[in-house]
Length: 221
Image 1 (cartoon, rainbow, N blue to C red):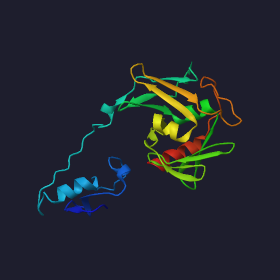
Image 2 (image 1 turned 30 degrees about the vertical axis):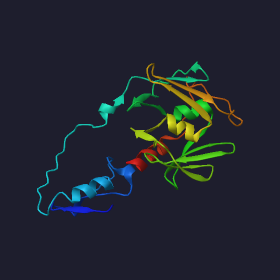
Image 3 (image 1 turned 90 degrees about the horizontal axis):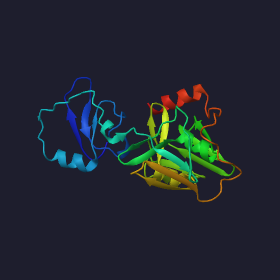
Image 4 (image 1 turned 90 degrees about the vertical axis):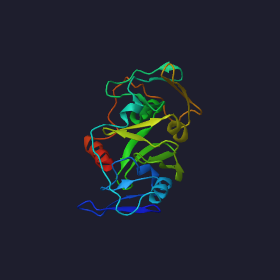
């Protein structure tokens, strides 16, 4: 709940404007009706408003994130060879950072991708390698050790996307991003373990059944 709470007299409550210890939930659909602020902001606001201050909550259909997303495709290269994307695999940039589907990345690098129902995390594995990612969260597990990602995996319409920092923090891959040409270059820092990169243009069996896909989507709503 953070350090301060400003209670609202809205019917159906209690609702309030308050801080939050989980900064990654702010701006998401995690709230049950309250308004979440960063702790530094609620500390400031708490000192500015007396009890009885009128509050107006306004709703509209504006997607505040849309202005930060550039849907022009990002061109992906693996070891300097251009990758042909399957039609359902989209790439884009958000706030200047490139995003590619995690499914595509695992196809290219030869990793298995799945869903862990017990921990509600995305699982990535290969011989001797295991990782777990939390949808829209920075907490991750890498070979049994807990780590915190610079940028959380981004889930849009049931598809998980990762950006440059996440790729480098999880996989033995060096990433170069050239924003002017919208080009993302991937190259192995060390050879993958007992695996060969899989071309993205070759249709492969889905890493999850449709049932598990539904479980992932349900798990992130």
